[in-house]
Length: 139
Image (tube, rainbow, N blue to C red; front, side, top):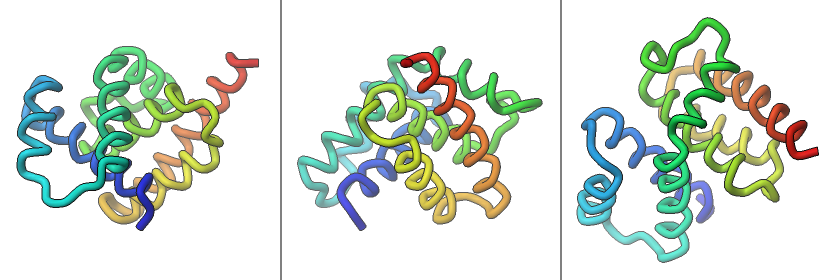
């Protein structure tokens, strides 16, 4: 598994911990990294950055997701899906040079590992729609 994929998985896990444990970002960082085994500086750096962006821009990210997840509220989504979407939208916002297709493909691979088969299509549709809106706004 590549460094970026590992970082994306770690960011998902941090967001999941914050969401389910109702913990503040600093508390999550402290406990999460204390309990982790060997993680390279590159893996940790990218994971921390995605987590920071997703935490700092949570309201904007959640609003984007809800707008593009027709008939779905954040609190009704599966926790893994909700937090994978947050991490992926954070990457779309913070790393515009990463192609949308790469961000979506990585999210789908992670969804196949951590979520249900039905979630893959849902995540694909939401991220594609969000990504198109962000690219249109950039142009």
